[in-house]
Length: 120
Image (cartoon, rainbow, N blue to C red; front, side):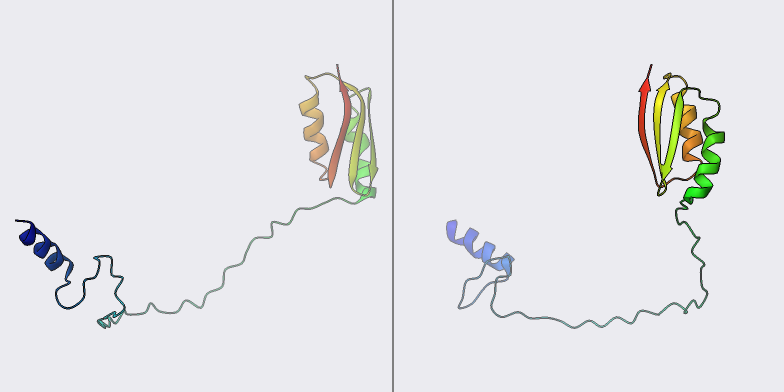
C-alpha cells in the first residue's frame, strides 16, 4: 500500500524517471512553452489635460500688515505682528472667540501663525 501511495505522489508531481524532484519546481531543468498572444492596442489619445494650479499663495508682509489690523479689530486684547510672512499672535482671548480669530488670520494666507495667546 505504501509503494502505491508513493508512486501516486510522484506521478501527481510529474516526477518519474531517474531523478526525484520536489513539486515546488526546484528543478535545474526548466521547460517553458511559448504561447504568444496578440493583444490589440488602443488608439493613441493625443489630447492634453491642463493640471489646475494648486500652489499655496503666501501673502507679502506689506499686504499682511495692512490686513492684520482689520482681522484683529473685533478681538480686544489681541496683538499681531508680521515678520517674513509669519504672524505672531499675543495677548488674551476667550476660548469661545479663538476659532473665529484663527479663521480670520488664516484667511490672510500667512506662511505660518505663531500662537502665543493666553486663553482665559
